[in-house]
Amino acid sequence: MTTAAALAEFHERGYTIVDAQHPEVLDRLLGEFLAAAAELIDVPTDQLRADALHDHIEPGDGAARFRLELTQRLVAEHNVGATVFEAFADVLSGLLGPDVLSQRVPNIVFQPPGDPRPTELHRDAPANSPYEVVVWLPLVDCFGTKSMYLLDRTGSAEVMAFYREHPDDRDGFSERLMERASFVEVRFGQALLFWSGLFHGSVVNTESESRLSINTRFKQLFAPLGMKDPFRYFEILHTSPLTRLGLDFQRAETYGAGSMPGLAPPH
Ligand SMILES: O=C(O)CCC(=O)C(=O)O
Ligand SMILES: [Fe+2]
Image (cartoon, rainbow, N blue to C red):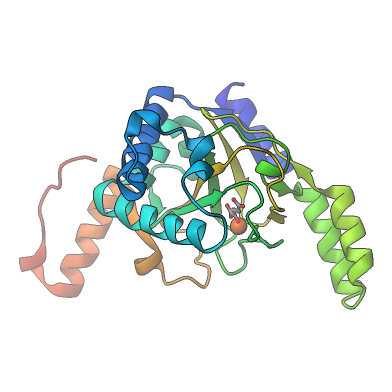
């Protein structure tokens, strides 16, 4: 799919599944994940497969602990957000323009078969800004219950309208939800890019393989915020030359000329 087609599909459905523009970046990322996981569970890296992690980790508390420790380690050692952006740079730049905020601490999801804690149905916005794109990046091939379900733009709007009109009809809501939801098939090497206004969630993984996936968010620097503290939740990833001049100017006006950093190198 061309970048233009992916952008058009994103607008129409609220999501698109795209191949990485730079698959080698994802191979590197998977290598970093496996190296960190191998150290955590004390198994040689070459004996570790991401979709067989359940051979070494108990579902439930064990899986939750592993997820947290893996997140801490990766965030300390790597800029996962920057790497994810790089792998899908053209389509993400098309959605966001040159001034991009990146979620500081990406979420890592580990769902071994039978894990009792899938992700409940939710939308990321309005807690997050409706101007955010979520990159849902599996490090294994995802299909069926090993994956995630989501409702497209129309489906999400329909179930929301039903809920507003019948706030107490849980069965009616679930029925409509199940009619509209589809499990996405996303292979390693691809990502699901979705708009923060879509409903999504997961169920107990009844496949025989583990899911290891990342989800992280990008937002245009000047787009309206959600309820998350922007400075704790995001960091600046890219800025245009014009934005850098504007930011330098504002900093100098606010804090005095001494703080003028001069010509920052382009990045
Ligand atoms: O991966 C999942 O099961 C849930 C992910 C999610 O909620 C998100 O990416 O916003
Ligand atoms: Fe979510």
